[in-house]
Structures are given as C-alpha cells and as structure tokens.
Length: 394
Picture (cartoon, rainbow, N blue to C red):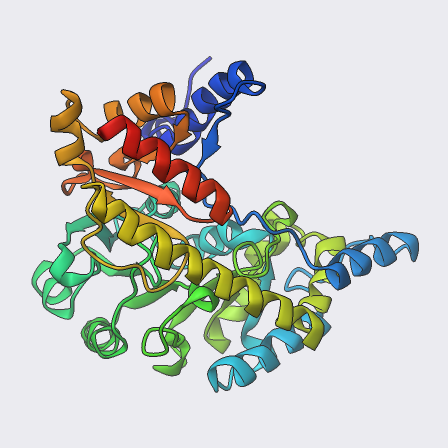
C-alpha cells in the first residue's frame, strides 16, 4: 500500500505516545500505594455542568438529532455572539460565527480556505504541534520562529516583519498558548496585526484558552482589533466539553460562504446533540459554575508553579491562562544523569509514577530541555505529584 507524502510528512503526536506508555504502566500500579498521577494531557478534570448534560439528554429524548445547517444552529451562533458582548465587550454578529466539529475542524477549514500550496505561515516555537500540521495538510508550510522567555514564548511584530518572505501568507498565533500558558500582550498583538495587514496577509488566532485567562490585561479577544482577524475557539477547555467535539470560528463576512461550502463537503455539520447541549453553557447557572472552576484552575497554578520552581524545575514565564506549566528540567536532568526532557518524562513516569509531556512535540527551540505539566488535575493530585518529584530529585 502506498502512503501519501502528506501523511508521511506528519510527525507522530508524542503527547499521545507518552500517554499510551503511561496508561500501560498505570494499569500495573493501579492497586498499589503509588497509582499513576496524570499531568500530561490538557483535559479539565471537570465535566459539563448539569444544565448542559440535561440539555443533551433532552435533545436525544425529543429526537433533535438530525443534521443542522453546516454553519451550526443559528440559536447557538446567537448565544455565542451575546457571550462575546457580555464577556469581552466585543460586538461579533452571529452571521460571522461558524460552529464547527471542535477547534480542530475550525483550523482545518480556515487553512483549507486560505492557504495555497507553498504558502508559508509564521508560528512561534514552541507551539501546539497539531496547528502546524493543519497548515501542512492544506499544502502550506509552517515556519517556526524561535521565541524566548523574554518574549513570553510568543511572536513579536519585529520578528514577523523580519521573517516575512515572498511566500509568507500570514501568522497563526495562540493566546494563551499551549504549551506555555502565556499570552501575547494586546499591544504587541496589535502591532503584529498591523504588520500582517500592511502585507495583505491573514491573522489567525487560536483563542481556545482565552476564557481561562487569569489576568485582565491578557483576557481580551483579538476580535477587538478589526473584522479581518480570524479567531478559533472551542467548547472543550473553559466549557469542559472535550469529548463532545464542538467549537467555533469567527471569520470576516466575505469568508462565511466559502467556509460554508467547505464545511458542507468535509463535515456536513457539527454534532447536533452537542450543539443543543451547548446552548445551556450560556445560562447564568452554568456560567457561575464555569467561573468557579476558573478560580480553581488559578488556585492550582498559584500552588504548583512556585512548587516547581522550588524543586529546580524552573518555569521562566508565569502562565497567565490555560492550565499548563512550561518547566525547564535541565538541572533535574543533570541531577538524574539523563540527557533531555524525553528521558526525564520516562524517568518520572517509571520511578515517581507521574505522567508528564516532554517538549519534543512543541518545536525545536530549546524544547529538549522543557517539560509541559498540565494543571488540569485536582489540587490533591498536584500535591501528590510535587511530593513524589521532591523525593525523586532529593
């Protein structure tokens, strides 16, 4: 069987490879006094609130399970529009909102609509690996620009301007970022967008963690810049609906019919049941629950980051959103006599029964010395992990 060059060009998703190894080891220690603590997957330990679950069950019971329009239920698009106004003070008409089968489908549709073979998209290094693969699957090339802690591991307008080439089509940013949990300062984002606009390019911003911002100066949507920005969002993270596979995108009015045509052919429509359930996400009772959970995520961050720093697992940029810690493990590797974060991840998994994610997935700019911890697990789990890491590194 001949495998396509496109498929061969996509690297393994090492997060999942490590997760499989952790799951296998976890099965052998499940009933021991040291069961596996999972800090490797970016998935909230909370599930959808009661009203959302009830809405899903009601949709099934009432037979609301048939296809919806490819752009999604208009009622849901309107709810999202109102949420932008109340949460961010942004006026985003429902006509510009496209409901998708997760943020992944939104990114796929955006790349299919805007990227031609050979086009280059500038992205920060480190960054979420799947995002660059969406660019590649559309025939484009992701150009990763190394970033530093001083830059909050984000692109700057100066770098975008300096690295813009003849084939550059635009930028793909994430704010807050996976794996660092850091956001682009709004003024720097404005400067980046100005550089892109001057060159007739596209500004595509992954905002799936935006509602989980902990600091007001960073908790602002890029949609406030102008109507040309394309924003990707999701019901997975803040709304705790990971397996429901539901997201959305906000695009310029002129792009809506293009996205609709692609969505009709590639996806038909997002999950109908998930859409009816998501309507309940915006009820005051649900929002109150989400905000309480956001406070819990912040409390976990406020405990875990100082604890990592005390262990010598330095986090050079305090995460201002999401639920990740991007920690330099080079000192720990030296102490344990191992080479890099890949070996460190397996060492920690096997000896401390703590699953973490090595930096290999996220690029090549010093990623071999970094580990990503997920703080989406409970405070008790985080405290157990710290205790075990302290013992291992003592």
